[in-house]
Amino acid sequence: MIINGEVLGDVHCDQHVELAAKASVEGNVHYNLIEMVKGAQLNGNLVYAGATKKTAKPKPEVEKQPAA
Image (cartoon, rainbow, N blue to C red; front, side):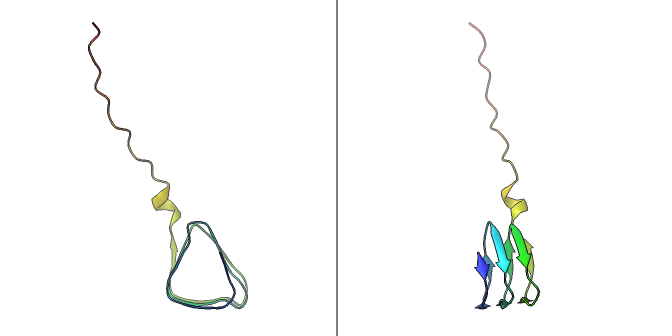
């Protein structure tokens, strides 16, 4: 996602976010990979979203059947 204008509100992206030179964001930016060019403005928080998606779920336990 490339932003090069005004955004009022939160931004959610599970991939690459680029805040270009004329970007002005009034809200939080949720990202996996961020690039911010000189001149871009952000009034909010940068929230890394990659850590929550990379956690592995535990495998379910399988009951062993006795050999016949």
